[in-house]
Length: 127
Image 1 (cartoon, rainbow, N blue to C red):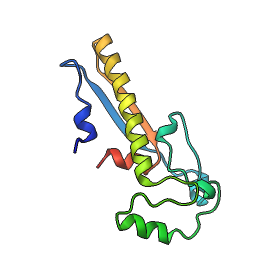
Image 2: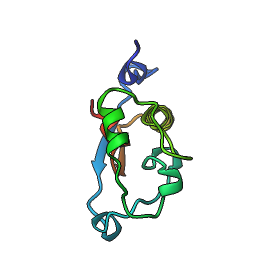
Image 3: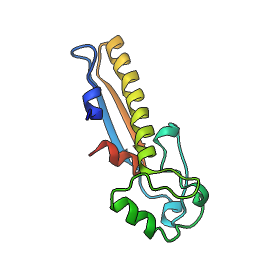
């Protein structure tokens, strides 16, 4: 299996991109246990909770049990599975890094990219 970092090799020796991944802090809605939103790069957004979006966190024990058992295709009504989140997040990250590599090559300098987001997508990049 090819890992994401195996595909992030610079096409030009010496071209460098510094990638900084940051998890944002807790918001008032996070503290209130309200499921929410997306940001500048839609494919790096939090998992879509489907019909539960914008509502208080319900009893998610069946979902957590499925995920803990390795069923990453388990999905809530009209929501996303962890596998879908992983695929879209990694594809978006690859696009961001490819753009940064092109810029670093053209400008002959180190390009720094910082991505600030909420988990779980950021957790996928640190495994």
